[in-house]
Length: 482
Image (cartoon, rainbow, N blue to C red):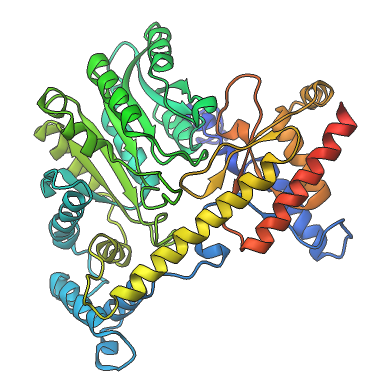
């Protein structure tokens, strides 16, 4: 190396990192931050402030935390509160049980036994209850520091750089952008299959077969990723569709990766969440003894929305014990927050009928789901009455992902500016209204189609105003560029 030249630079750094883009935090967000700074400096805009409609951070948008969960967390964090009269008796009882399992009764300890033994047993009971008695082995469950780390850890496990071809990770289009970044970071290859928008974002297994056939010319597809409920689409897979996916995984010898973090966010009448594991075992030994499955869950979503606490679990099905033990060793470097872990215990083992906190816990969950349903219906109604916008029914998760018409002149102008057409649209919307959306390009979309994702977490009347402004702007946009 030449004298004086710095060791770490863009040429010498890990080149895989250069492919990590985090598109959801790209140019739109940078411009939004800049515009808010201008507003704070007194520069006049056509609106008062920037309106963020980008993230699924429920509590940042005003949703209250679960009462029982926070009571237990407070009591465990400061046990002297157990001697006060301000907490429900079942919250105190739960806190005492948890503290008995913590090293020296402290959330400040590493608590490896609680994380690796006590909590997995409770998660296994939760899974058996969820799946109608399908057995769950605590030894196959790893507690993780959230969904993002779970995805990274699983990729670390399956990518083998010693093989002649890169590892293929098969993901739906659209999909959460973290998948693309994680795949790039580990030097794997992203293999895409397009969801069927005309059939409510169903998984079309024939499209997966076509993608696999093309991909095997340059990589070795190993993992088939399924998001259920879907992000950004808000769809919930039918049982029949899940069975098709499982048969395909068996035929093609693929490991199934089930992203089920929104499993509690299912609110549409008639929509039912079926875990891939439950369906797998109900299909019989021909599949339940052969197909390998990894599923993930997170407390960031669901009925808790604890994005700041960061905890989740990974369950392995039919994965060789020796492989699992190595994964456990890797995971030992990632010790999740004990406060987050005990919050997850509350969620997988909630208050039961007859407990003092049961009615409140259930009412809070039902209120959340009812509100989500009301907002989803509002979004569908407002967006679908606008010419040039189509929004599929929203059955779960926290978002709408409508398709928008973009005139050819706008497409050409966007290309001249080096932008995707929906990015161009979202930038113009931001400048005119202050509303920040996420462009469909960030998630992937069928060729020739354009979308945006909008979070449905704003209060109802505020959300109605936001949607109406988007519709009004899109109408003007069509007139101007047609």
